[in-house]
Image (cartoon, rainbow, N blue to C red; front, side, top):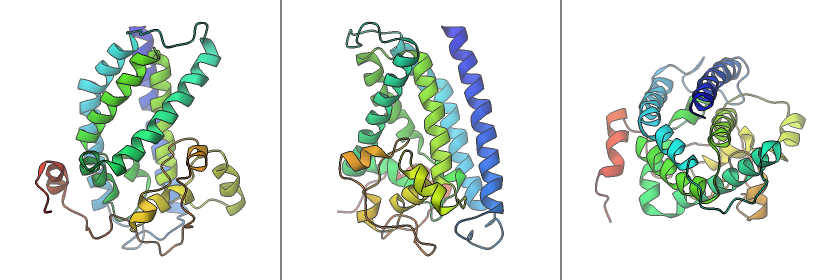
Length: 261
């Protein structure tokens, strides 16, 4: 399993890097919303987001992967017998996507979790690099919470790594500024989260920020009545209501600083 896990981890990195590069180029050739500053919008904001990726990657290799590997090696007997192969993989992916929906929702509802998650939302424009902008504290908390689900339901490492690749690929897609044909986007949105759905989640209005929590499958927001009726518009402001963007050091330190009442 260790060799298989290492192989899957390597292929996950290659596939994610290729997907990121493809959409990064495509959204600059065919943007749905003009990049701020004209042209490709400069490099300061994407560079800041890539710095978060570097920190998260280091944490992932040092902590998240070992924790996931250890959790996948435990078994508490809640997994139905015979749930293996393609059927087992599909069940695992549905369960993990269901979990990440509620975990995302909790990150907006619980003040302690929001301290870390708001760093992601402070980005004042969305593109593929926004999908990489997560505070290392949120990455560690998410891995810890997910480890509980992995242990409870005896989810194998192959399913965990497959899900991670799908989540990252989906996030890169639905954060992107790629202009899609309206009919195609409408059709895709019936099944998966598209940019038109997720951009509204980053709207600089709290009632919309606290909605559209789905990550891969769009059905969870419909089932649990968390879909906002707001539609994406070119002039939609992105960010956290009442807050402005910060420098990288300020963003890294903000979750640990006291807040005014």
